[in-house]
Image 1 (cartoon, rainbow, N blue to C red):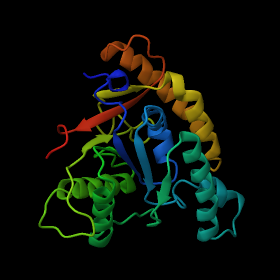
Image 2 (cartoon, one colour):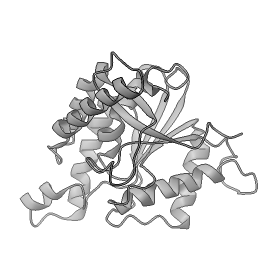
Image 3 (tube, helix red, strand yellow):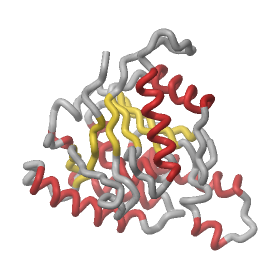
Amino acid sequence: MEPFGRSPGVIRSGRRVLVFSAHAADFCSRAGGAILRFVDAGCDVQIYDLTYGEKCESPAVWNDHAEISVDEVKAIRREEILVAAEILGAPIDCLDYDDSPLLLGPERRAQLLEIIRGFRPDLVLTHWIDDYLHPDHVETVQAVLWASRYCFRPGIQTDHPPCAAPEVVCFEPIAGAAPVVGYVPNLYVDVTSVFERKKSALRALATQPELPERYEIIARYRGLEAQMSAWMKPCEMAEAYCRLGTEAAP
């Protein structure tokens, strides 16, 4: 098992990393530490939220403001993700596809293909392929995989030319659901040195106040797991990932 966080072949200067997050907070809660590590290493990182998580991630807002509109919830989440991403040091954009259900038909998949070709990443971080306890997550990863496997085919015409297929790596499923959805990590990022910064970014996502504590518990558990199974003895806190397939295709 390759220790993702300490491998010079994975976190290194010059990488181009795209992060596709189904909802407002997913990029930060699941991959905030890795994003910080990549940014600190001098990589180009771009985050895309497919939705603002205005329905499924924002119950606290709906419970406290019964008359609030969907657009008002989106505005709140937009401000939160901008602050969180700024703390992580990476730009973010939201495609605003609407969540619960998130539906990614041909036009939206074509837009993801255009994004990949335009950015030309060598690494994509996104949801676990079998995170079926949240259909929005499955919809996201299926569309991202679709785009990542067609981006190098010259017969598909887009505004940007074909590019090499990026490596696709999946971050944590829903907190606590890994055993149920068959998530077995094969890569780890040591986030010990950056976790307080990740925690600050999580606090910026104030609509979900449970995130800092919840993901600290997960990080400490994954750190123990990394020590025991990935030979990362100094690691106290980690993010766990699962690489799909092999390295980037030509």
